Length: 350
Image (cartoon, rainbow, N blue to C red; front, side, top):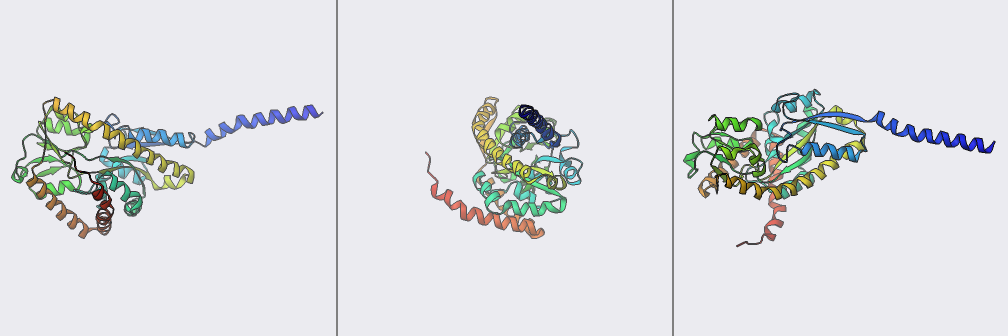
C-alpha cells in the first residue's frame, strides 16, 4: 500500500511539473510595436528588436513583443497618436518628432549646443529629466521609457559649401527639432522629411541639404552618393533620445515585475548602443570620404550665429510652455553644475 501511495504521489508531482510550463505559456502576453524607423537602418533600426529580445529573456518569455518597421501599421509620424489612442500598444521613436503635440519633446529629443551623451544620460535618470517629460506625456495616455541614446550627430549634408551665414539664407533643408527653428531664424527654408524619404528628396532637388543622424546612420541612407559636403559638428543634436512609448492602459495592465523588466532592458539597450555607435562612426566617416565627399567643420562665424539663434529659440519656447521652461531650466542648471566634472577632467590633445 505504501508503495502505491508513493507511486501516486510521484505521478501527481510529474503532472504538476508538466502543467506549470503550460500555465506559464497560457499567461504569456504578446504585443505589437511599430518603429518610426525602418528596421534595416543601422543602429536605430534593430534597437527596438534587441530591446524586445531582452524583455523576452528577462521575463522568461512571459512578455513577447513583435517589432514592426516604419509604415507597417501607420505612417511614421502617426505612431505617437496610434499609441496614445491604443491602436498600437507600443512604439519606438525619436522624442522630438512629437513636438507639435508636446513642445518639451523638442528639448528632450535634443538640445542645440547642449549636453553630450554622458551628461544627457545623467540628467534623464538622475537629474529629473524623465519626471518632467512623463508629466507632458500623461495627458496623452502614454508611458515613456528612454531606450536609445544617439551619439553626437553630423551637422548635415550640403550641395554647396557653407562659408558664411549668408549661405544659409534661402537654403531648402531637411532638419528636425529646435535646430530647424534656429536655421529658420537665419533664413533657411526648413522642412521635416521622414527618414525613408530623405535620399529621394535630396536626389530630386526638393531639398538642397539634409541632416539625419550620426555618420553610421547617414552612410546607411546612402547620402554620400548625392551630396558632396558633409559638415560637423552636429550642433543641433550633440546627443538625442529615442524611446519606447507604451499605451498607458497597456502599461498599467502589466505586473510590476514586467514593467521593471522593460525598464531594465532599456538600460541594457542604452549601454550596448552607446559603445556600438562609438566604434562605428570613424569607419563610416572613412567610407564617406572614400566616396568623394569632403568632410569639414562649419566656420566659427556660422557656429556662433547658430548658437545665438538657438538660444533665442529656446527662450521663446520656454515663454510659451511651462514644461518646456521647467526642462530648459533644469537641463541648463544640470549641465552647468555636473558638467564641471567633465571640464576639470578635460585633457588637451595635440
